Length: 584
Image (cartoon, rainbow, N blue to C red):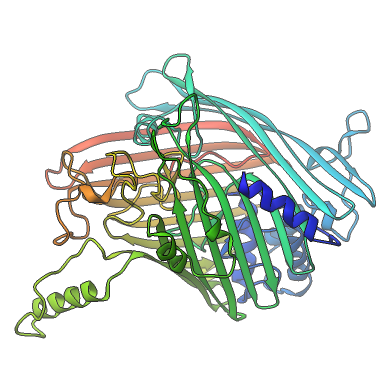
């Protein structure tokens, strides 16, 4: 496999390896806390770029220790969370970690945050159990929904040269109907996971595995190889690359120098569940992406993103990885034209501007295709409708080739003097056909080069042709107690019959009704409103008791018919893991 070959080639060529760190887990609450510290500081960290996630632990600790010393507007709760964060990352801490009052056999829980920890000058390892057990009672449903996850998490470093991380768990659960419908939309792949099998009465059973090694090739270049997720952007959602889809194998190269961060990502994806190469193989597909992020000023961070998705095997043709895309410093669009234009190219940008300490503005822009002539035609039509022009200069408008999306959002820390409160809200607008592709071999099969992995979107979890506003809030009145809320409302234009109206990422955009007259939110308009409130108490480091309420409404806008309703209340125990959310 070419990614593995490239990985070992870089090891051989890397020479002396410097100190290396693993990363904070994907989706970790520590990312939110570090973003809060940046927001309160009113300036971005010089150790990492917050639009590229997950964060490296070493860089995060360097930033946290600097904030602890220099920032004067931290609350007492912030200080407690800083202390706890440093205790969870002792391999990069300066101060001696706290010891447990009652360790077990002098070896287990000798330190409050780890089941087992060993640290010397040349070796560090941390081993922790993973557990999430929860039950939800839904109105009108006799059987309880439940979740039962058990596993382990291991991380460490060797000789300050190589870092390693692994997470394994097995899960059984029975979930609400809207989650199971999402699984059907994913052709059988469970949301955020992969292959499942049935369990009990209406339940599913699946296995999760993440793991990688990381090392430093030079002082400014770090490498990571393994199986995990990535996220680009500052928002609740990402229109460029999110952590919604299943884990995937990748090689990542991070180049940092003072005010810029350049990331190359080479990923091996799967086109589940179509099997066309015989035996039990899922069709391979590949993603190559790079993100160039600049600290224009301490307050303004700007990033440019480009990706190419390649795939599309059938019973006769096997599409492998194209070596042209291994060039780390070239525009992929130029390569795609060079090899015959079979692949899907996505470009975009993301930014965050910290207006004042405690207030930040962020956003993203993504473009799959934009034709200048089509944009002119749309502007011409708009000017005539507004009465600013008498006659139209172009006959066409609303081209399907105008495939783009935009995100705009605000973050606030401690608004109106309310300490320990974080608020974040954003708007996402995505035109039809964004993320879709066509059947390369014209065999009437699902496009392998769509912006997806394991039948799940690589960006927005719902797809495209949608308008959404999203809100999240977090309040910490006490050191170990938190109340969080999330509200999502989106309207999406869905397909009618077999006609593709541009919302489903997995469809062939050649199955549309025409080249023009493709309007935003066209098709059957479905509106979803979802709200969730959670209270969480941490009774020992990493151990949480959660109580939550979730309500979801789904209706057809044209008729006003309520299609589905869900109201659930539940509670659970969570150990060393992020709560599983179903925000779609």
